[in-house]
Length: 327
Image 1 (cartoon, rainbow, N blue to C red):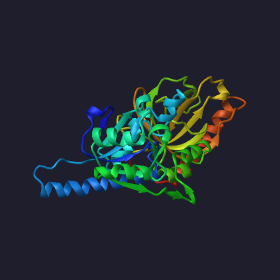
Image 2 (image 1 turned 180 degrees about the horizontal axis):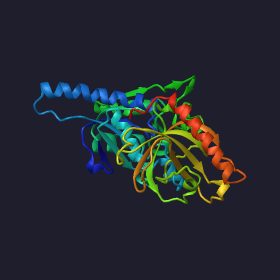
Image 3 (image 1 turned 90 degrees about the vertical axis):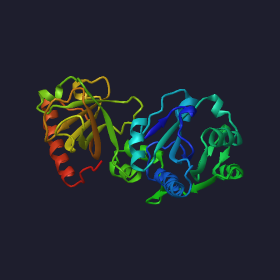
Image 4 (image 1 turned 135 degrees about the horizontal axis):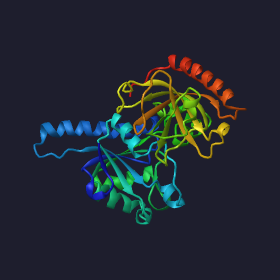
């Protein structure tokens, strides 16, 4: 996938899905689908009928930093930091991700100016897709209907996609966050359309798990990555950089500050149930399957060791009943 972080690097013309797309959940997928289909259709026709045609690129246009992070001045946690977002978008057939630099100048553009200067002149959009709640322009005064009216004089079609629901509720990034914060891993998976993942590199830890007979890999993730609630999880673990881990393996993950050993910071520790080897410096992908229990403080290391054994047994049972990841 081509990633353009400035307007002078974009591949154009394009059909563009507009939005923040944090999490790239099932609702986002419905917004993206029309631009992928539009490009497939016009490119096939153009290749046959017009020897001088220019390829139209299926594109997601989003903002960097997230507008809320820009206005608040604070780092915003993300369900899918850019590297993860790219992987999900590629699976959906997107060819290009445009990260519009969000600054005060962009924030001050009126809806009409945003359409003319950004979407038409800079990006050469031929077709646009948005969710029905899409807002844009200065103080979010532009709506999806306004976008359709403003784009029409340029011959650009705008498809407004109805909000997708699950179990009677709208699918949204906020709902995914709420589910993960409550340990509702299956709910989050249903909303996303895939298992929530943590990706990072293995770094040196205090090796407490090793002394207890349960060696763990300490995962260092991107600082902006959204963390689910503290506690113990049944997980699938994989790595393309480690022989034997190309196929996902069963594991147990703990997120927390390790109160039993007086931990001072939040750590992510992963214990593999059926694999042993050196993981330091390697990249791991951890897929959440089920929340097993919340974090708790034990009377001592022996009580902790016994509970970890129980966690491992329970994780194996849950993972045996789950589907092995295919991605």
